[in-house]
Length: 447
Ligand code: NDP
Image 1 (cartoon, rainbow, N blue to C red):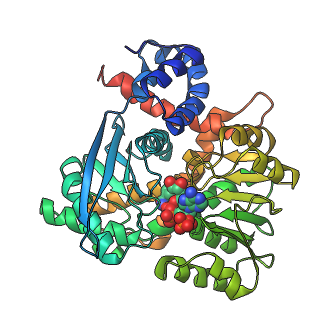
Image 2 (cartoon, rainbow, N blue to C red):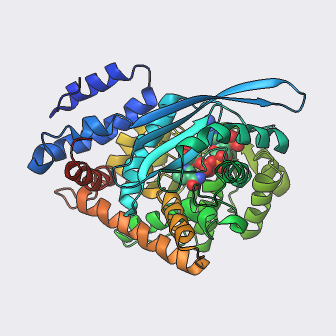
Image 3 (tube, rainbow, N blue to C red):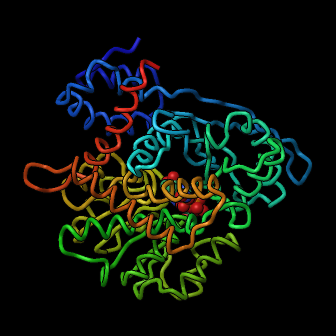
């Protein structure tokens, strides 16, 4: 039985007992609870309703087998999930991840974070997440298609434009969304906005592909403004070379900054001259079309390739855009000692808790639920366009994205302002995200 807790220790002890072995989920909840429990204690209207206890228990988790045949005719089986975490403020919304490390714990942490992130955007979207331990790397297009079709054959019963709207995430890009949506359309015999991140030819939004990376840089711009600083002339260390990282790099270049690194699971490249527009186009082709490795960049442009992560490279700004727990305490110390000014998370929970603690107290530090919300925000705009059966221009979408990112920054500043005038963006994002969801829960009865 869950009881109302006004203390973090018993609250976390109960959560750990109910969710054994789910370390990613524990970390995500601990971070939110350590800000939200004191807030509830100070605000009577949120007390006595078990709000955080209810919010840490998913509405439901659907777990299922995905059987498919590889190109050699072997039958293969994977496991897939959809975690429908909370629809308190809108239909469940969150990406699908295909990666060998996907587990229920990872998807619960991502789904939980998504509740607060989606709330921060101001759009009516609940929190959800899904995925499979399927690894698309090295698979042929036909294999990926058969896997996606098999997965959607099960998943289609649980999603829909007013129920749950999946999108992409690690390992789920334009190709996978196309196959998933195609099968959804066939099975449901409807053409609705039941998925986002769709291709432009079949209901996708202009600017969705760019949105998470661009949004992270827009959020960074807002943080820097508070110190009368700009992106122009600043060096940046970026990890990843997937959807988020590529468009983060693009926006840094457009705003006059100098991205020095990019990475994948094999290692990172360090280009002291900076990744410029032409090199980025080459990199996009490498990653989005040829599905090559980042080491090929070093061969093409004659710079260094190293194994590991890029956090040892001196830079003014940092954008971790690859995956969770990719930046540890020692990396954080190195970045700070090298004069880091600000860090905005493009990935979800890329900084380990000890690293986050250090960064939060030393530099401008934006947690992913605030700084990477641009992707889901434009997914929300894609839903609106689908419902209205219209398409907005890139200028319209980008203007809305900039407004939404500035709005998230404003909420973080409002709820995260400390007595000394500094902004704790983690606190601001946690409380700013919680308030709307908490209000909705309070007003809708005990459900
Ligand atoms: P992609 O699959 O497009 O790219 C992921 C990148 O990270 C690749 O370069 C990949 O390298 C690297 N990577 C993945 N796992 C590891 C690992 N264990 N160690 C080192 N590198 C790794 O994913 P996205 O760019 O879409 O997502 C990146 C992050 O951003 C994730 O945390 C995701 O949840 C988050 N995010 C994404 C959004 C979106 O709109 N796409 C929205 C909000 C957050 P390799 O190819 O070698 O595996």
